[in-house]
Length: 389
Image (tube, rainbow, N blue to C red; front, side, top):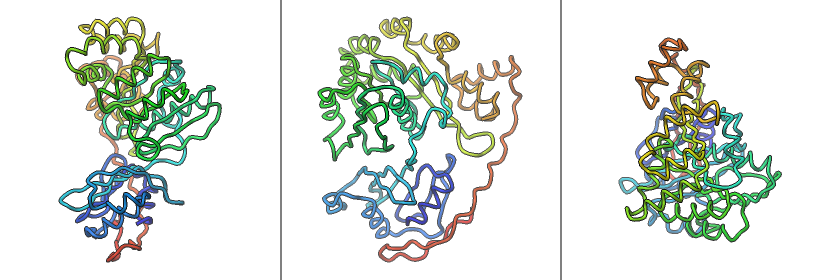
């Protein structure tokens, strides 16, 4: 199993799918591709699930579990965020690859404005995007930047812990949900009594967690977290929608006073076929934006304000960043237009400024062939041949 996983990581996989009745699959440059030819049996998948779990109590009740999160690491293979689930009464495992090295803004090729976002003394910074858009990496890069440049206490609440930070200029406390604290709500409430300067929450999942997060920002902390929203404008609307109607006006005013910035991102296939590029929308909350949020009826003006504030504040819309990526030959015109918030307007602006004419995307480079090997150490496991692609 570990040889197959290592082969996937060497080919640049971001996720691995292990399911009874199916072959090993890996998401490589955004596409889910098969790694082996022989399908796994339910017993083999169950054995793999047990192998990835470290808590003996949880192992003992594996057959009663329906959803389970943990982390797993193996020397020479990598570190992974693991989700074990039941489907059709048998097990499936999804593994997210976590690099050993903590990412930086430069390595992720994020806009320079992210440094300004991370330098905020207090308030709430939200990183948003769909699943698999690189939110965890961006948050880790923010924490690393603060760790390098500030003397602060940074406390993280994660499920599970992903990137492992070492203390540099700052002191970092990393707590894992389930083993170090009961849940996000309890961990966040306790965090406010643990003298943090910066609190990072893996995800804000409900109104209660958001309410506590806003309280943390109101009491002078810098709060960094994520939401599954596509852009800055929809993030504000989603937060308000999570509360009952009678509370939304108060929440909107509190949000206008505490929100510092929103970074929304999408991953796009690179023009050269080698990996993916980040397209980011950045909202810096200025006094004018606070007024728009507090008003409620003016939230629809935020996107245009972002576009107009690029030079002065370092903000940018998705479409502005997509234009930059096309101009730099990092993504093709067709890919950028498909990802644009306003495709027709994007196309018009690209043609007006003659930045680049449409061109077809080059074929992705062929991935190196994975080494063949067996799936060893599993009950009833036969030989598994790798797909030669």
